[in-house]
Length: 251
Image (cartoon, rainbow, N blue to C red; front, side, top):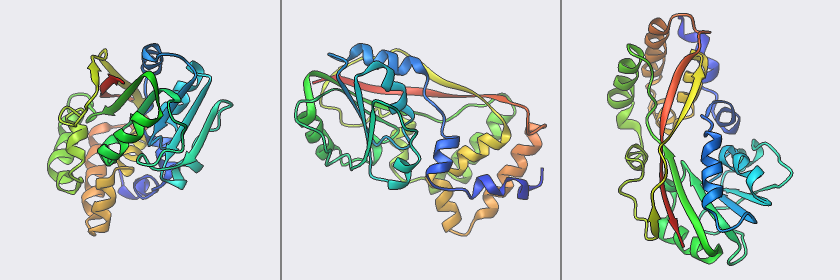
């Protein structure tokens, strides 16, 4: 496949790309989180991005608040009757004291100043509230494709990931979590994606932006060409999975 056919995805950055290409969490994740909450009054999703988890929580709570420091992400969040989106950092949340029964941070906590965030969590948490730090790890493809992808992820683009990425790859296993922790059930994201969608997802990575800024775009187009050749018909949907990890605790 010629690499110029993929340019619109590789170089389309910002909230619109995130909204289109970031994998969606399974509905059972929101159902389980809501079931752990002390009540269904208010859920707060911190670092909400374009609202992927926020929207899943909406049917389970009277109100959901989504906070993100990026105006671009907030602008691309899908509106919902009982969701309020607002630009705010994890360290300064515009929420009342003792108001939230569930506080979530999905694929975001590795960017936070954790001590400051945890101080805000303790301030806004209702009695017996639940905090969940959620991440999804490295994707898996089928035989033949997965080996090619992992070489690109580990060896080629690996040095361009920020140090915080290691926390995601470990499922937040080493992150400081000073709360009464309890286990979450195993879950995964499972999607059927075309080649265009997979490469669009890769275009949203911070490491991809770093590669471009370093003037090494040929690394990206070479991978696109190699993956396209191994994929076959680019319109053929293939199974893509991500493991979902959680650190969950009660305050």
